[in-house]
Amino acid sequence: MNNDLRIETDLLGDIKLLSKALYGAQTQRAILNFPVTSEKTIGDYTCLIYGLIKIKQASARVNGDNGFMPINITKAIIEASETVLQGHLFNQFPIHFLHGGGGTSANMNANEVLANLSEEILGGKRGQYKQVHPNDHVNLHQSTNDVYPTACHIAIIRKWPQLRDSLQRLSQTFTERAEELKQQPRIARTCLQDAVEITFGDLLSGYAAFVIRAGKRTETAVNNLHTINLGGTIVGRKMDVPETYLKNIVPALIEVTGDTEYRQADNLFDAAQNSDDLAAVSSQLNLLARGLVKIAKDFRFMGSGPETGLGEIRLPAVQPGSSIMPGKINPVIPEFLIQICFQVTGNCMASGQALAHGELDLNIWESSMVFNILESIDLLSKGIQVFEEKCVHGFKVAEDKNNKNADSIIPLLTKLMQKYGYSKISSVCKKAADDPVELRRLLRKYEFIL
Image (tube, rainbow, N blue to C red):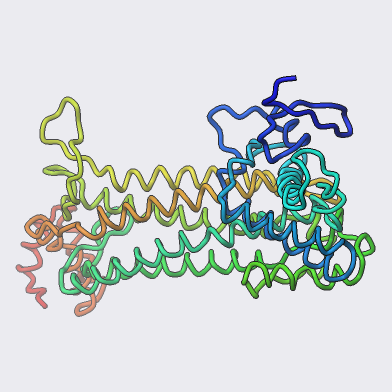
């Protein structure tokens, strides 16, 4: 046999894999079953691997402390867990991120990596599992069905601060620009028609309020993921693990992660059947994205031109806008954010499908949900950062065009209506027959003045 290969045996028989691989037979089968070309692997999502490894570490502690597993094996698994995370051994998790089977391959990948590292710590050889076995020791008192959903929750919780920080910077910049432009008038529009006079400060304060509110809603949904089904094993039956394990596994997870908010679900059957908590996060990201589309489109409208559009603001010029039209500058930064938001909305659709297609006692589609959520967080974080730095921070009011637009007839009519009454001013508008020049003349003629 090639010295670069070793043979392992599982339920289905012998299988060859790389001798240096820390993973084992079941991971190798997943590699063959779910080929990775240009797609991502679970190892590319380090926050998910962190979740898997921390669960294994917590489980080893509980099993060791309560005499369910020899203390030397417990210590070896705990040490192996730290080796994976501190050594950034994420390349040892090569499974396609949408592997089938409700996360079994991901769970076994973690079990095999930790078993092999632990085996070597105790003086054994990689792939032999004579002292530490992936199922009998690393996976003791666990099922994929409580490990993988919990790891998915942990992954999103750890990823969320990335987006939270981007949202905070965006809302802060909107607030700062609102203060800067609080005296700068602009014409408000409803139904794309002239309305009343407000200021750019008013407009931007509304944007800031939305970003803050959307961030709070999303954070609430993310924090709800601290409710986990760890200890529920296969479908939520508490009798499938010792009572002491069931009682202590979540406190152990709190200890190894340093996150005191984790709590066991009140109904473990519900937690196994339903993934609406994940879908709720995806839904809030979708609402955030849709609101950001509106804001980014507003910037495109207000900056349209240079001669025939609204032209009330000037966006920072970041690149030429055409390969054939000299001098053209396009609003590419808002358009970047808008397309990101389109993708986030699509990701939400996939998550909704995953929620709707759970069957009977277990929803096995968490992969479709967690990886779409993680991608959405990544995309939104980057898009918001670029939009804030290269658009919101640097746009300028085009005062000549803006001030001319702000002098629209509609704000004047609204003020006159408040003084003289709707019927009188409306009758003058009727006589003017939608001609603003004639309308101004008639208002002067009839001495409707402020």
